[in-house]
Length: 110
Length: 114
Image 1 (spheres, one colour):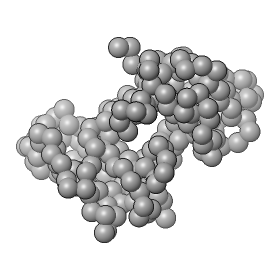
Image 2 (spheres, chains in turn purple, green):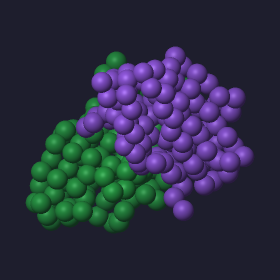
Image 3 (cartoon, chains in turn red, yellow):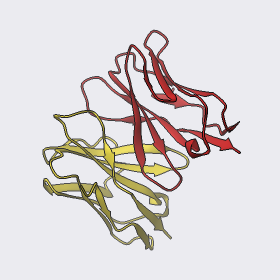
């Protein structure tokens, strides 16, 4: 089993739609969780950290479910500019390493 | 602030040649990471340094790969000899250990080995 797994997509959604991605991780002791965004042929950039209590940043909501070992990202009222690959990141306990999922590709259609 | 700087941005070389990729982290950041990204395997951590010292190189694929960080503002990733399967985008990232977990990525070097 991979350490971090994501559905690769692509998710094709119309503008204004709500879309959700999940990411599962195998190490129950993982300590930090993030969502990064990567545009085509660009570097990954931090979208948001994921906290145990869940957190929201505008149209984006991230949640962590430690019991089931998954994190989620919800995008409301999707925009054309949200089209990108969304990478789930998990850090193993006691390290500063990032373990990346392979990413979920989102295309928002006009 | 300049961000993480990588050079070259593109490199095309023939199999068997030596390749050197360069990275300048953000000033003041004390952790540096080298990643490789391919379609098949996604983003993989190759090695990371804290305060110029290699901490974990378990992701380095084989002896053909080596990385150095002679000072806080410069790191290299060397492949010798290069092979076609090394073709990928290589990213460098840096982090301020005392601030947050966020890693800041450079623009990457796109390597093609023919």
